[in-house]
Length: 508
Image (cartoon, rainbow, N blue to C red; front, side, top):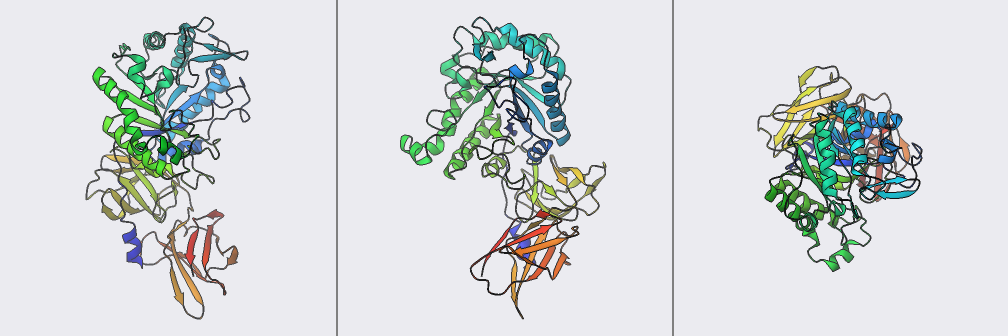
C-alpha cells in the first residue's frame, strides 16, 4: 500500500514558459461612488492573498486602483490613507516573494461630481494624468516591491484625446523625474490584442530613453471580446466552431505587431469562466500561444471580494480550495518557477514541519537537491523521495522554523508557508475486515496536532490510532473502526487542531 502511495506521487504536472500572475482586484471597486468607504465600496486585499499567489508562483500581481481615490482633486495631493494601503500591498508582495504592477483603472477618464471626463477633452488633460504619475513616481521609484507602472487601464472612445500623445507625454515626464521602472503602455479601444494593428496602425509610438517599457494588451474569448461571457459555451461554439483556438487567433495580431516593431508586449488581462470545463481548454490553448510569444501575462481576476464571479481565480473556502483555472495557469509557469503542493492533494500552499509535499518545475536536474531556507534564515536540505518528469517529492524536515520558507531547486525557486499543523489525506485508504470494518487512512501534516478528530457521514468516531506511520518519512496514519450499518457513499472528515483536511470519499 505504501509503495502505491509513493508511486501515485510520480504523476507529473508539466510547467512551461513565461512569468505569470493575476490581477488582485478590490481597490478599484465601487466605481460609481467616490471616494467611497473602505470596506464598503472598495477593499484592499489581505496579506494572505499575496502569500497564496506567491506560493503558487503567480508572483506578478497587478493591483488596480482608482485615480479619484488616489488624487481626489486633480493636480492636488495624493490621498495619504489610500496611498499607504497601496504601499502596504507593495510591502506584502515583496515580503512574500512577489511584485506588483500599479494599474490606474480609469479607462481614460476621471469622474468628478458624477461626471465622466475623458482625458484630452477639455476639463481633464494629459498634464493632469502626468501630474498623478509624477507624484506616484516620487513615492514608488525606490520601491523594489513595484515591478511596473500601468499608465491607464483600457482607454477607449477618447474623442478629441490622442492616446498616443497622452501616453508619450506621461512616460516622458516619469523619465524626466529620474524614474527608470518598467512602464506598461496600454492601447486605445480597450487595449484589444485582436484590434491592435487596426486601431494603432503599423508603427509603434513610444520613445523611451530608459528603454524599459512594454505595450499592454488585453483579450477575452467570448464573441464580443468583453469578458462578460453572457452566453454559454455551446452558444459561443455555435457562433464560432473554432472556439477552442480563439485565444491564439486573438493574440496573434498583437504579437505580430510587437515583433514587427521590435518592442516588448505584455498581456495585462485574460480569463475564462469556471462553469464549463471546455473554457479551460480555451485558456490552455491561449497560454500555449502566449508562452510561444515570450510575453508575460496576468489572469483576470483574483481578489477577496469576487465571491462566485465565474472568472475568479481567488481560492475559496478560506483559501483552502483552489479554483479550476489555477491548474491550467500552473502548466504555463516559467523555467525559474518551482511550486510546492501537499502530496495527498496536489493542492495547498501552507504545510507543516515533518510532512510530505510535491514540487513541480521545468527542466529540473535529474539529481536535483531541495534546499529550504526558513524564517529564521537557516538553510537545510530536504529529503528527496522521488525525482522525475519535472516533479520532486520531498519531506520537509521537522526542525524547519514556522513562517515563510524559500525553496531552491537548481536554478528554480519558490516559496511556501509553514504552520504547526496542516492536515491533508490521501484518497486511497485501506479497509480491513476484522471484528468490525476498520479504515486505515494515510495523510500528512497531522502528527503535530494536539487534538485529532474524525467524523464519518457527520458522526464523530474516536481514532484508534493517530500519528506518524512508522515506515515512511512524513507520512501519518489514522485508524478508525467504522460505525455499523454503513452502505454506499461514505464521507470521512479529519480535523487536526480545528483545521479540516480535505474530505475522504469512499464507497462501501
